[in-house]
Amino acid sequence: SFAYQCHMTSVPLYGEMRHRTTTKYLVVVGVAMFLATLSYVIVGLAGMAMFGGSVQADVILNFPPNSILIAIGRVAVTISICMTYPVILFIGRQALEGLIITLTTSTSQPLHPGSNTFRLSSILAWFFVTLVVATFATQLNDMISVAGSFAATFMFVFPGCIIMKVSHQEGNTAHTLAGSVFLLLGIFIFVMNIVNTVDEHTKGHHRKVTLAPLP
Image (cartoon, rainbow, N blue to C red; front, side, top):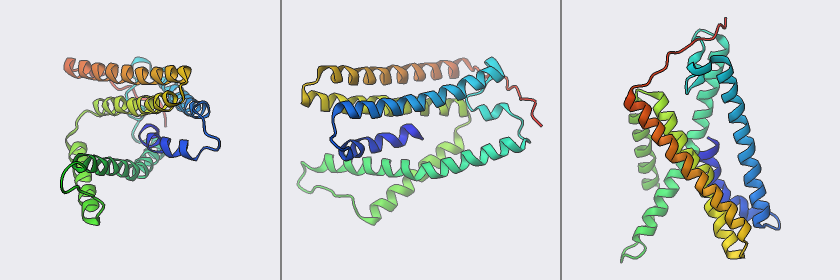
């Protein structure tokens, strides 16, 4: 949810910064990435320490389903998804509207998809597509891996492009280099995750679930 929401607010955030500079923006992006990475690493290391090589992509699957604590965790995940979905849908709809406007600007009758009919249609279409994917996707691990690959793109590629654009206008070579690092890192993570997901899916690699001895 961090990756899919924060790229939407990165541009307004830069615009609202007091005495904004690329240095301040780079610090904000770096601190946000550090905190997010630190929290993910802590959870990942905790899962590896507890379950070893049998840890699942969804670590909740390693715990017994009848545990009260796990039931609370599942409810929390459900609430998080319900709160995140509208934000992601809004981002997708805004991107679709921008794409339509861009493609039709040079035509004799440019489209301005701002009507309630278009919004309702796009929302229903988006919901239907995600419902179909959720219904027929049988391997949660693969879906998490693919979503994580795109998340890496949003977390590193988009901020890197913004940094490179702004620093290029200011003529700051050091910041341009920092933006390039963000960009290359995001591309690297995306490609490696996709390749790993395809490789595991092709080999039919499914690890045995080890349940934790919780009451």
